[in-house]
Image (cartoon, rainbow, N blue to C red):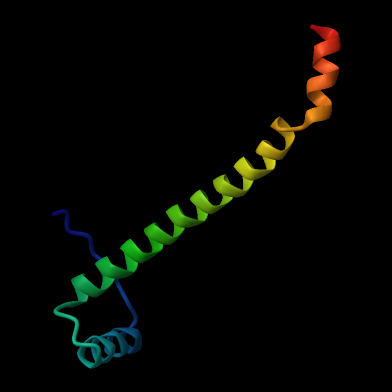
Length: 75
């Protein structure tokens, strides 16, 4: 595993310590790792959602029967 370092102001550090105790996280590292993974997963899900919307929009254009008739005349 790779180690990274972050710096927090004292008050935020105390707040983080308190939150970790209250939520029974094993460590600050575990908490931060979870936050990062949640964020990365949400970004992936958002991208997939946009791709699904785009695919549905393109499907409507590709399944256009009027275009089939026009192309039949040209080909």
